[in-house]
Image 1: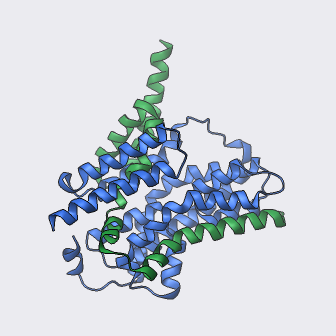
Image 2: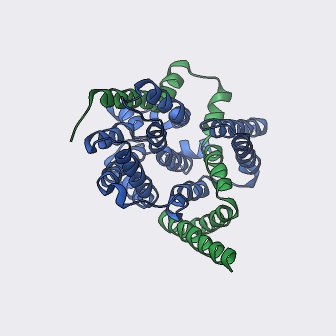
Image 3: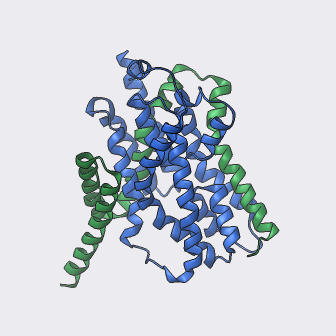
Length: 106
Length: 240
């Protein structure tokens, strides 16, 4: 159960940087009162930010990623349950992986 | 959107809102727990003690920046490099607080800066969706954040204890849980083809393009997100 000073300093440095990211954007916004266009862009950020996060990650998973993503969206839409959607996504990924392994070994 | 939201009365911050956030966040743990285990296992491999590992998890509460820092970990600890890495990976969170301004503007002191301290991607996305539905209780954001933070510490600490015992191979389906979470969160954020189709397509397309071009995070994310949001804002302002 050690706590080395160099490790502690690295952790504190990272923590300060991370809090600046979390709170700094809002603090700047509050201090500067940006023009209306900037405000509207920020209001429209949620959808695009998660598209921009998810699409490269799905592309990295290849065809299995896209199929699993369709399953996730369908379950989330139908059930409105995040838990069900996430579980189906992982299940689909596992099933598709097993299918691919079987198909290639055939 | 805004006139509907404003008709519901002033923004409040109640225990009820926090509880609502906690209930919403619990299923999200399915997505974050395996990720936390992995971060804990890698911390152990990099020679961090349990205390150092859990301290990092609790103070950072940002999985991808923890992973990146561990990737470039050395002896002695890379103080400067780790700090810069955290700044680069987490800069995506800067616009999130600003986007939640309709709620945050009404908060003061600990409620405001504390809510921001626990804000993560999921908490932001779900709060934005709640805000659009006309939700006026800003406690929701903190409820989600604190719940995920608690389980994050538990999962990372557990991962460190399990050490080499839990070694999911690189392509394990469990890793898909984190991505599936964000894909699922997109569904309640969708406001229809007319408003979201082209902006979302542009965001996803540019992000994939930037990623294919070999740009590391956060660039694909920032390029895609701001291009999509700009187009979306332009479409809305044109309609006014």
